[in-house]
Image (cartoon, rainbow over all chains, first blue to last red; front, side, top):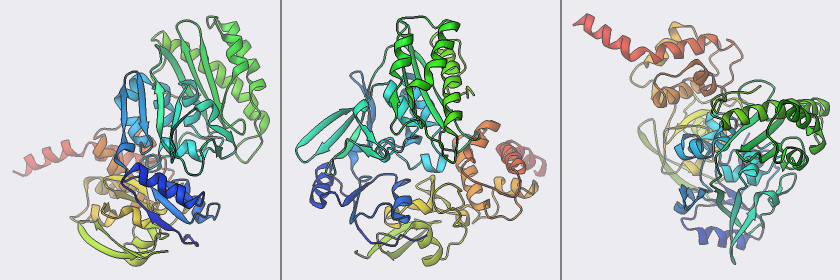
Length: 295
Length: 165
């Protein structure tokens, strides 16, 4: 299917140039990173920008480093780069586990983490991990840099806190304390599929927990109710059951081609139960290796 | 809309081609350059039939603009088999891995990339590597077994050479 409308293509080498182009086009330019969502939208006329600003020529956006207690993931960082990063695998294993579930190899070679959160579809696999690691989105606009906590980033279906003349420079994750966790993804089959339900869990030694979802509400969110039930308590079997039974109160799924609302609610509870057990076991060093399916 | 001339290396040869920014790589490869191994299947990145190697990595050429490939290096199935069948391709033949063959170029490139990164992949790694390449004929078993066989090839080759000499 060819793209039926025309646009200008820019590939700036400097961040300031890219921001100037976005500012000049006043909302009619789209940012192009991996293009795995954008090109589909162009083909289907869901997006019809007058200009594309390709950021793959901007060197400073290619960064992926842990420095001074912060992991900096530049906007050009692909999911393949995350998966192949030893730092991500060892220090942020839940992000690593989530990155492996995104689409397929050929898409992950191109698709970026920054692009994923800018597309902001409700089932984006990276969001729960970013929520539990308390990520911050770093934006560059004409007036300077702005930092948005990931909890304030997703403002609606395919809508983010980004202004049209702002560019996502990258995503920052503070280095967390020792933790165990997981990203549990329910698909229709193993292999390439969008999530019906996605849950990320972090468990810390002081019995605090962070839990977040995707695909079961218009925007990915933390499960505040479940977190409150668990806070300060060790993960005994009864408590895990109680949390699992409470999971559907923190979500508002829809029925669609991939699953019914009731199935999503039911599975969210089961996934939370299994996920908490795995997170506790991984914290203790006895759980299944990261990347092992828990379903 | 500005027409631009882009240049990239394709299967070892440098080619220049005039494109519009909205031209998609798969269409340029097939219609302007006559490279027909990448196929148009779903045309939205799900099926993997349009797979090509861009700068050493498999990409969905239906989701890449031709201008994005400017200055890059592309390898398609035509380039993979230029000097005769690779051990992987021989294994596909031996296992009768494909029936209609529509998915074969994409599967071959995906498996080629896998074996470059992981010369001895597990069965799960093989399945994950080709999870984005849909085959509606075979049920995948002969494809997976061929890749498993090919992963052993370097050892077999050494023994075979010794026997000849």
